Length: 339
Image (cartoon, rainbow, N blue to C red; front, side, top):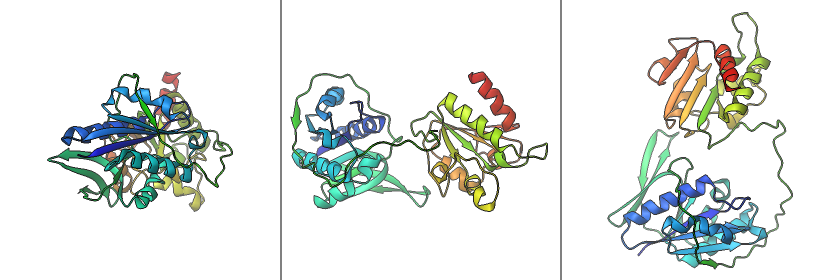
């Protein structure tokens, strides 16, 4: 009989975030495929016990909670202690958690303490005939592998955006409090926002907006309009709540002495040398659609592009729709329509 523990940390407002609910969905899928297995929910956070009723209808047999003010903030020592205590209390063979910053930096160490194994960046989980297999990508998402392990406990970190979030009705549950050592030499001081004051990376956004190098190049009047480009893009991001990406060429223009959009960093970079986002929709502007950049779009479901060149890479079957138009004009009109 396999015991499956789904790990989740409670957000500051006492709720479970979308990544945690995706991990619950993955754990439920494994339990349904393994005859005789049981599901245990393990929560960590300042008010973990109070958040347990949110998962009442997920089909779990037990609810465990490590709670206290020392577990409310992200720290390796306290997060690792909570995860270890929950895994031991559940006697879990499989531990499934979302690949958030807290669990991603913690669970490899916990697996080492418990003599287990860990797989990260998992994009699929399947269970059949008494075996569990996970899928993940290698070599810049060009090769997909399917992995099985006999070692237990097996920690599985699932990438956000790969599973449909579980949604169920709350209800009363019996929560078992688990003791864990919360001592740490790290002291939390405060949260600080970026100096720019603009949040441009939103993993849960419905739309990925990608800016290419064409925004900072000379326009039909022979001049560059970087400030206007920045204003149009930021106005669109504020109104649409989209996430911002960029091509490597645009990010690296500053090192070549060219004008750049000041709010772009390598964190926004999408493609072979950047991130591989999983937004439902994507809109590329002033990008030519070269393979190294487009490889980062493979998991975006609907792709559209705006480019003045009708023969650019996006027109070669890499975009569902290509608008042959000036991105400055198009985005100015879009911003106007968004109000």
